[in-house]
Length: 419
Image (cartoon, rainbow, N blue to C red; front, side):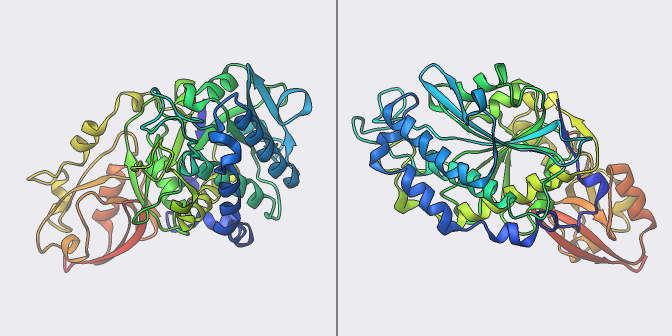
């Protein structure tokens, strides 16, 4: 399986939001998402346990919301539902517009079940009370609905197909996403799934910090996310951990590149107190808009698909620390003398070398470069790898502009030298 790459065909200064369209982006509103979260986190749904009365009622609510969007039902027998046991996934398709790539699909998904009244195996207590799961994961469901609706505001359909999916049974072991990948309904069986975006718990954004998992499952994902972040301007924390804790893991086991957006755990996680009044609606809106920009750019990307990166499954926080660790001597001595920059190549993100050394009082230091920054472009031209970056710096003029990825935010820095 593979993922689509936009960086090779666009400079880092291009905004993915331009692909999405201002009208579509503006249609995503926290107030609209709030209504969906309030409904799904109401006591009437009894905590939305998979297969329960409340879970089925929550599924019916989601179907009533997406029926209005004109999307194609992609479940069993022409319906929105894919049934398995007593549970139901909900699937709807936005067909691609380009016959050459419409058979390729990007999945945008969220689980809609929660833990019901809670028990000793799935609740941090107290049990026996309705766990409304406003953040987990009514927030993610609302985000996907908002993104699906926003696509209806584009002047034309994206080139590739987009499948919007709402999984059941996630809290019981990712049952819905695993079932879908093992046994796809006829409506989507012919599609080649090239990428997925999983949205799980996006309702508690703090300090504009968004956690992103899976960004190393294909080369270039981080750079593509940074481009898409131009509108939302969130601070990214890229977590290299891959664990069976949400539905993105099912796609990773199927060797499909994927990312998950997550605003972090909190004291109300899997407790009855995960309620609507604690939701940061600005955060839900921001993450949903980021999702639209990112998915829209991937869906229209003219570049061919790229493969799943198997090495991502063995990487960890320790791998990250080793990559980003500063060094006492520059890794690129040839450039240290002129610019004062030392970088290290990243095998998972070749087009974004990591800054690991900055010489004091050098042009790099004076220009504001920081350890851990990623170099994406030099004088408006994207770097393809570390060697390419070295060559570009070698021939650069006395006044040079770097496009930098700093914690997911694109910034420009000017370096000046007299050599």
